[in-house]
Image 1 (cartoon, rainbow, N blue to C red):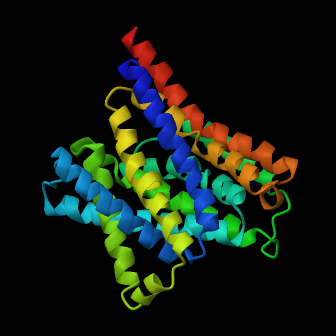
Image 2: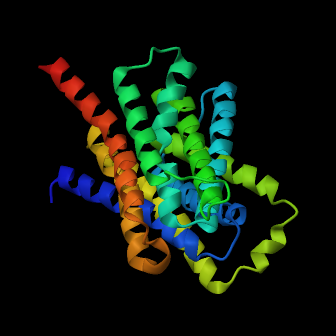
Image 3: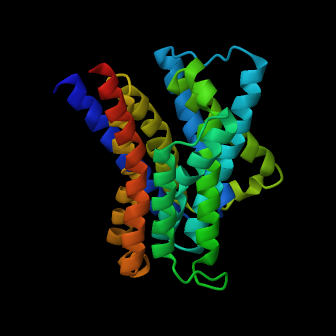
Length: 296
């Protein structure tokens, strides 16, 4: 198997595992905060051991970078908590579609953070996401069955958009491994502080939930991080992002497969969802075309 084909295999496995997180989150009988906390304990423990074995440095160069990592780590923790809470109060499909509006927030936030002009492509993405959201939830009401899940899902998308935009400078300074390690570490520290008086929750977790949490933390977080950044050493950012953008697609298909009764939604949800998910592919496609024109 060629190195490139092996890298594509790794990133597809990572994306499929990312897509499984919603399924496992629905199965685990824990509140969202405790779920994410234990997930991070598993993930950061495995990554710490792996990086030490492989001799991967995670050293930061300045106190400012440490504070920035702390900030993004806290937001990452809140993103995951809101995402899993959205699943708990609605379902996996609603949570994934609502969360997938993050390109809209990114398009708004990036010009504000870096004082850039808004590009036409960003306006197109925003319009498609707004249209898709309207098609999904044309008669939205705060009294509707999925209202809380939708709103919290949007908040989850906003939080991850802030994480990505505010991490831009760090991604230029450090490897993906270093960024991922510190963000997960500070996310874990933050949730540990929140749970400082609730450590007894660890003694109430059912055996099957410990198994699910181990899979979520080790396979769906630590291993996917290693696979993703290993693949990115060979594949372009464009190729990697196209595959990773399939995460909600995998997640929704798996949700319908495993929970057909609660996850099968009306046709407008899937039509609007397809527009929202499709919008995530516009930016990498546009960027790839632009890079090709510059090279030629």
